[in-house]
Image (tube, helix red, strand yellow):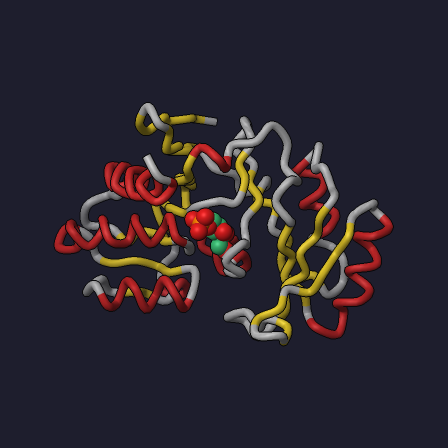
Length: 223
Ligand code: 5RP
């Protein structure tokens, strides 16, 4: 099976976690796009979605799924999103699609995080994928120096030769060369650095379930 087919498989499998009559939290990325397409087949059974990015909002609306402002929804039963890496405890690196801040916000208002991913995303320890960090632009150089002091290398993410601007009007720094052995401690520390909006380690809000697309079918990992 191709990676694209594995993504479609887990996108479809996630439907069983969607609670009829409720609003579902929806992540961002190519795997989530498969989920959104599958969700459209049961759109009459749900109230709608809270979305984690402008891109997902556009796709949801195009398929006729109502999108609610997160401020108007107290809590969600379930949030479905992809990951760039996930370890055996359900800790993740996210933000490859630059949507990490809104993803963390929607995850925080959800009772359960269901991660959907192909098997290439399952890792022993987080850190092989460049770690995305959303930063306030005036703090970029100092935040990058702090990652260098930790032993990493850091670069501002570019789009068309210019710093990529997130849905929140900020920039992304991608950090390479760190092995994140204690994801909770790492997330807690970096989140406190002035100018860091969101660090792409999701350990305080880890996944409870991962639907992993494998050549043998969908494996369910519960954490
Ligand atoms: C976006 C994300 C995505 O969930 C992550 O990048 C995985 O994306 P894909 O499903 O395209 O591999 O965190 O900010």
